[in-house]
Length: 72
Image (spheres, rainbow, N blue to C red):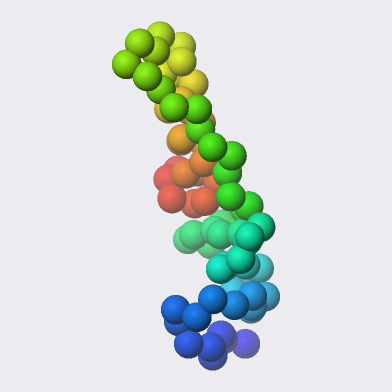
């Protein structure tokens, strides 16, 4: 059954592929991926970061995007 509610209204509707938008603890998923909870904050990288710290931050960002379905 398609969703018939207007776009732009914050509500919880399980017809949106189990995604819960517009409230604390909500989930999101794009391009058919299973909706996931908000990712934890990624540690900021400073201009004195080592190669290992930078690689860790990049991998964490890539994982967060992949979990949402925004990158392969």
